Length: 379
Image (cartoon, rainbow, N blue to C red; front, side, top):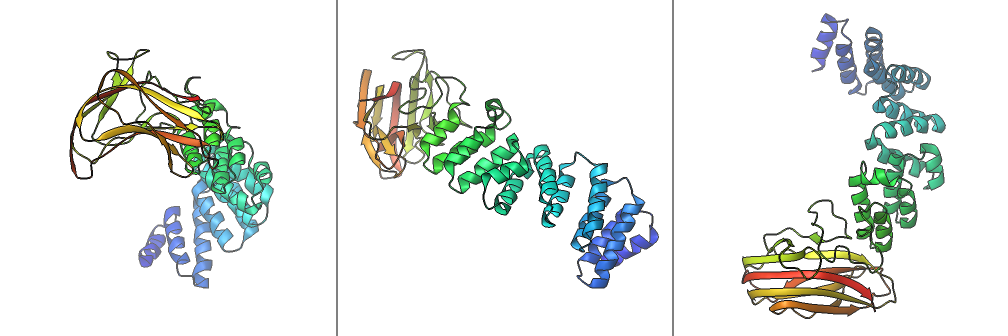
């Protein structure tokens, strides 16, 4: 391919693109003569296209690789002049300045790049976090207090298990931005805290972006216990009902049979397979050293050998700390309860509906179960 590039440069000497291609091939050899010549070709390309920022960016990066730092700075300045709002140019120029110990100028450009293109925010924060010895104040001083930077910094702090700082930084982002533009980042950040078993902090991060007062997580509060609101199949936080994937049961809301309000939860079963049972669960923050009671009402008309019950699980250890009695067929609304005290090791529990009693692949199950008025209350 190099002979082709040489031939193109010879027959089209006024085309800047062929000089760039030839320069790239010359750089691959690591021969000093070829490296020197590659720089000349980059210079020719920039000279032939004096208003093309990409040619000046290529020249700047080539000069930087060759150790011509002052000339590289001039070429970066020209590229920035031609494309002052292009994040890619700001990022390249900023990184070069930082490598040459011009931190203030470099991080100023990198911060602008991250503000213009959110994909640069994570690398910008990681770089600053490393250079400033994980000093959060120094990172903030270098990169600023923008939403993109705070989002990336909170993620880095959580990775380094500095969870309280992570939530503090995250909540500097205005709530309307976290609910809107950063909705996916908000979901990931809460999941990151939940995975680290930091349930109270995750609830705090989730509370001020909740859609309503009723959906705001609080210690000992089961959200949507009356099943009045539809479940979200995507983007649900741990602090609302989550339904696992699977063929059975079919889950929905019923307005014809309810104990109170306008709806109840209905589960319709029609399956001969034991695999794929859809589990219903919700994470609840709780206060340690305080006793609670989980209550729920149900109706059931089932034909199966399976047993169904609700469990309360300690999120920190994964241990089952309480469970309700198994459901029996009931034509009237019947109460199930489970008393529990959170272990000292954790600040959150998982409330989940489970089945057991069928070890083989075939397990006939048909009928329906309705639930309403689920709650957790201090005892």
